[in-house]
Image (cartoon, rainbow, N blue to C red; front, top):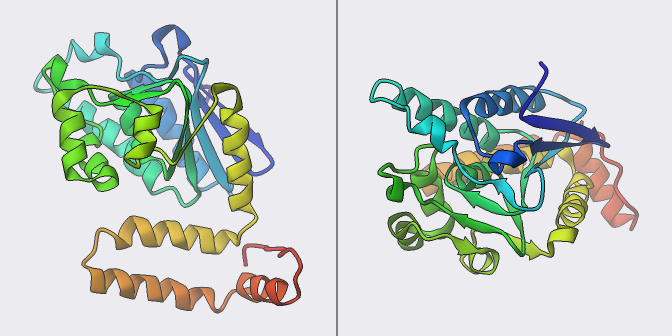
Length: 260
């Protein structure tokens, strides 16, 4: 598939996915959502890719939000399917078996904030602004924001961000746990890549199982989540990666994982 609004660039096991609508501050329209869906469907099953870094083109915006011009034309018959299409994309990103890391390089508002929330890790530039301003437009977050934000920052902080509709800067987003760390704009992408390269040095099967255990186990009652975790722990005991990781530690050498 040829993309018009996004770009995928694979480098040494990492797929760099960039939203490329800078004239619209990389806003999510229907076409962009569709292209991202196709891209992440492909990435999830691409064995040559072990991690994904998601960002926006330019220095102003990660994804400034949904395309308001497009949203303004929605009716009661079309709005729900649109929300479900956006939610399906966010679900696909969250369920990706490889780490998906957001490099939030500017405005991440509305749908852009929801896109970042679906990623496993979020790092921001110092000029980033994050928020969910939908109620000021007479709507609510529709791509998972009302569900993911409380799970990440807590119910009270999420309620405040959603009901006041006021965006917060990168420093405040870091303080409340919405982003993992803040970097100068010029250093953001290189710093995020360095972090991801560090993740890739770990056992790929273990990383995949850890993602699954957190994503699904935290939605279960604690006893069921612990059982889910123990199942993965047991499965990993039969892998060559475990033997290699333990052996490398005992022999004081770097591990050479094969994903087996």
